[in-house]
Image (cartoon, rainbow, N blue to C red; front, side, top):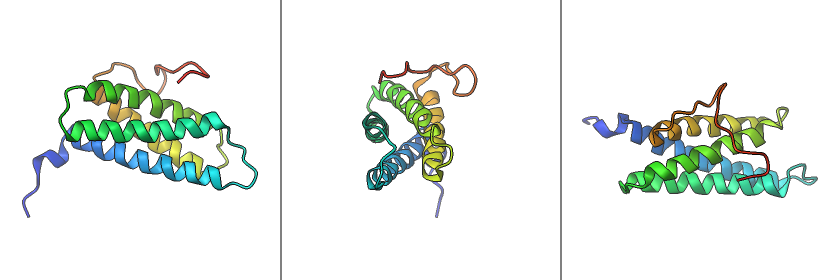
Length: 132
């Protein structure tokens, strides 16, 4: 089988990261909803859902080669960063830690795809608390 050159492209890596992050956010959302005593706020649950949706939209736009995918990747970066920050608040929870890691990975690939100059570690562009 001959390798497909597009499978190694930045776009293909970003699409893969977006689908993986979306799946992880939805699994984490289900986990949060299944908790008997919920320590998770409605806003955190919404951020998980919006992050999953943004990842799906970005992946779909890249797959369809829609020229606006740079803007969708910027939104995806913002939501993934916010979701990671929210999930990192639950350091003692392995499910939440895994979601934060996946969101950070996806945010980095989307940042690169969007052509943004912000960096995740250190001087990251961050959303204001309470703002999506």
